[in-house]
Image (tube, rainbow, N blue to C red; front, side, top):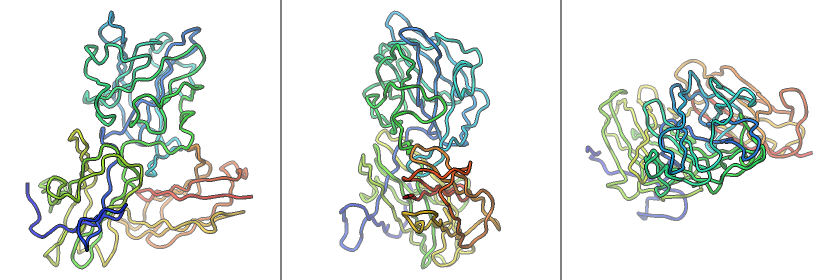
Length: 437
């Protein structure tokens, strides 16, 4: 390990933890670190105990994620039955933007595998009814390299944890790759087993039986704010007084052990550890928290001219690491306090509450090109797209867009809370909008 010779300076602003009199130690955690794809089983419609109408499996994950060659294995949990009942390899598929956002503002989408009678089905090749056993059975999701991403069983775990396949467990933390979520059996009605808002951090007790919702968010995901493994709200780097300041924010912490920060003089390799939770108590995580937290780290630099690339690494209790970045920072491209990553500010809407219209103001601070790709959308509390206000390119500067409470089809929506989701390049932020009549 290589550490910076200069002392680390870290600020922590949440709660009331103070490690030094003059230093408020700001610390924020990566919520979940289960896998780099953040794709999970979200809904299962097994055989009915009575007449079987249709069956399907639904996955959820960040929009744009390629899940080609991911594999779904179905196991019979009965002790008298060993081996895979069937295995399906997903064809060429990128998860779409289905108008759902997670608690960090990341756009999410769904993939549905089932028979042709299922609404919103994406693949049905070879699918027939009686594909999903109705009790003491389960599914395991693998990525294209054969790594377990998620697992769920209904009725009971059966011998899935013992020897069939024996690679999943019900005792490790829910953030573990091989954790098996065990939920109730299907019933005789036209219902499905549905994950809660906390798709990953639930042992199965939060799953519910409800009317099937193939291709849309579940009945018990009413907020549309589906909690997936961490997608940082933001990760920013700026230069100030020849020091490099790193800022990042997440909306929750689950099984968080701590952070590491890596630095390199080239973008591809030779990253060196400059600070770590293992040697700096201020970088230790808080385990589990549902409070959003902001982090601030200062890397003292002794050079007047420099170019560096930074990576932020979060580490969970199982020692699994997830990298964010890299982000480039250079004195040649930065002025005092100029943001290098997530280069925009989303201001509070005004007026808010509003009737009949509100203004959404934002400022693009920097761009690697002359213009940035910008999308501004309005969503309802169910995560459904209401209005696409803007899609196009905008240059550096301040911009304003107005929403008059209309949907895309020109209908005035009902009073209540709505959400504005602004994407600039690969970064996104949300703002709450309250329409009153």
